[in-house]
Length: 122
Image 1 (cartoon, rainbow, N blue to C red):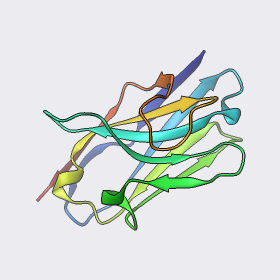
Image 2: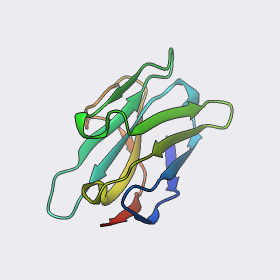
Image 3: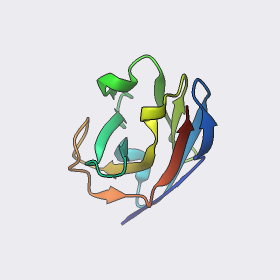
């Protein structure tokens, strides 16, 4: 079992930055592939970025490429999402996810956090 807790969300003006964190606990979380997802009101949950555990390969959804950076600190069992040049359309609840088999920009991860709200004012 893996537990995920996101933090770092908040209200920011367009063009600003935020860094989200996801603290993971449970069995051997450093061996899990992880990802960030978001869900805006009235929309489906969509992938944002992902990172593999073994070699740190990253992938990004097109809307965030060049603005967001995913990283992980396996020693601290923590996943990060650095978000720069935020836009109004980035407003959503952001979730982190983990899985020991699934990887990449797919919603098929087994474990999910409770989410953290990011609101970007225009």
